[in-house]
Length: 94
Image (cartoon, rainbow, N blue to C red):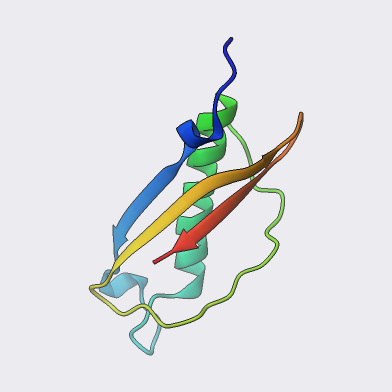
């Protein structure tokens, strides 16, 4: 099996914020965003490893601004580090 470049594993996930995704303040519920981020990380890691992967931990998550209903959310995932049994995936939300 040939080695895979990390750039081949990049993922860009695009979603729209529907009313059922929002909190009482009309912005995207944080748990929904984390779920989308986990999905993007799973796709990136699985694409790289060529088999299913799981999330073991998250280092840091900062909510910088609310995301309103009707907004388009883009989540980009790419690999920062790979070892024999783990990898680090960086996610950026815009």
